[in-house]
Length: 437
Image 1: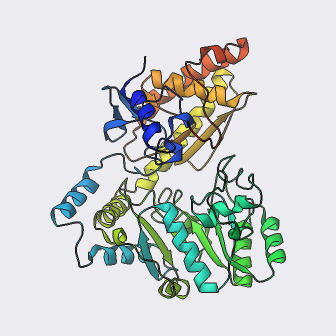
Image 2: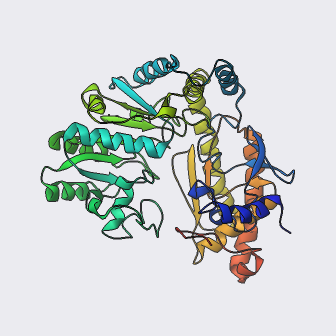
Image 3: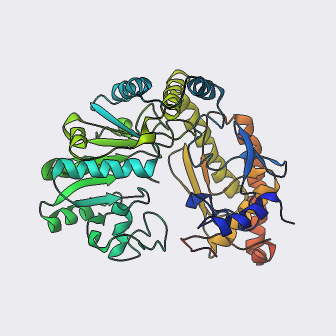
């Protein structure tokens, strides 16, 4: 029987193209026709749906934004004060200078900061600055970096170009064909692929854009090799830390990896669910922002800035990174033990605060759908990813892993006796981009 959330989503698909504002929040990617879809309120890791059900969030916790847990009291207190003092004025809020100073302090290689309000636009800003700084056009990239034209243009040459970096099936509809050939992909840990781009572009490279770490550690010499190529070609090295930043240390994970970029971009994890993004870089590169029109009214609002200050200060004071690593490590080890105990074949990867697993079977979508369905019935919002927060406790992990072990056992049995598909109560999850009707 459909609940209020499922019914509201059916209505939303008629009013909102694509159903949701964020692709990864589509119920089709989680549990088609059964996912609660909407929340009434959330606190810590508790999420309440429109029917009064309460779930524990053992999934991506606001797609990685609620690093302290939903509605953190310290961040909310700072935001409430900002609201009372006015979130927008003809004048600028002084907190943006304080936040810029803090980010430069955390990244001693940097000198200057610009702000935005979400990761995709912040990456577009960083790309614009790099092109303005170098006077060149070509971007070499690795990984996922948002929805803007500069990035999706990679699929103009071949609509499967981004399959390994984002999602299969992304059409570049609406992206000017004149951008064809301006964004060229290389795979993580494949330095030779970047070297090939450099040879073929012959001095045209404006930037190298990548996540400093993805699902696995960088191989020895990989990041150092990328840095050398950037130095040799004059390309701007941009690290996208929209997701990885402030997970294992206060600042970017590149600080732990020993290689500095020319620009680093943050968003998801710096303001605990309030819209905020930062582009941090060297003076030499960042000053090019003055030669290009990069400006927006709501980049000057106060709430995001104040939320970021409160989040980062709490992160440092409470050593949140240590907790995230502890919780994430327990989750990864727990998945492996549950799989071993039940005979289920899985693959686990990711840094501990950003953990992932996949079921190794002939029909992964069906297996993953069964897992989400079964965990939801046990009171968990849970998929194949777990993004840790400061609000997760060892008790949460213990209870969750006990449920996982039960579901893994049920899944193993269903795979062995061939009843998996029959046990699904709705369609299987989508694994690529689809136009919704």
